[in-house]
Length: 362
Image 1 (cartoon, rainbow, N blue to C red):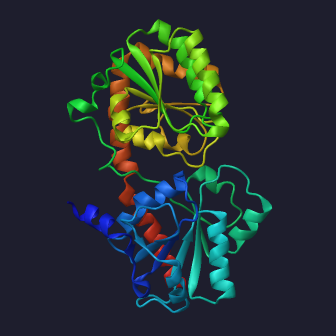
Image 2: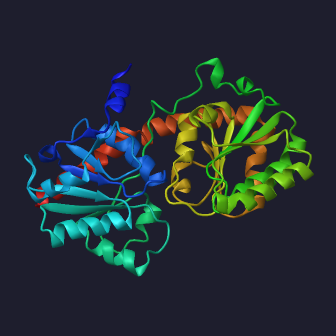
């Protein structure tokens, strides 16, 4: 049994509250992009910081503060003048404000904003009460009215990697065709799954070597949307070449199996899937939702089209289906770009610099 498995079997790794310098709260039980960020980032931050999480929905391998330990936050940490409460959602900002301003705990508040829209008045009120703010992209920063630092998300290059073994090949799936184009994530209108399906219905009859693969959960409120898409696929006679896999045990291998990844979201927070694809040596066609346009180098690592524009999406996909060699070249370039610009360690280091500035200001 590995060290990680031993820790998981023993239960949550309870943190020593006196040694905790940074707290990463997570007040949402269901997996989300924010939760995924915490899961990936905290193990890297643990190498140089006393950091702990608090809240549900996180693996037991991460250091955690039990709610009973929160009273320990009323005392200063052993090595710092105060702790940093690093919030990423409204309820977490509010909890930090209560901790600092009501209970007078020695904490300073940091908020990371990924929103690609104007904030609502309540959120603006919360943000104004933060001691420092991070934006995850230039676009998200453009909606902030307070000083902020842009720190873009990174990707774990150990978990997301190029194909290396036979199971990474599309042939291992048993699906028809020689190449695959993928669209991963929750199946819903916001994610643009319908735009992808419509593009595939138009393109696949012209490119018999290609199969489309859709993975992701369908929640009850979006069941009708997903069922309508499947009906369209059946009516087009493409049910064997546009495949809905649902939730898969490990989506990482699917990034390696597809020769092109499509991210057609109508709106997005940051959006990690293009980085996950490029780290797997797969080029990306994406909308300009979220931070996608800041992640992709058009004509080199993929293509970017206006969000919601199905015709533009279809025509941006077409050259890759017509020329798999183009997909390979852009996949190689995407991998090199991610290694240079988006390793997870680079994100962790940039956030650590924000922490140090906060401690230096006192």
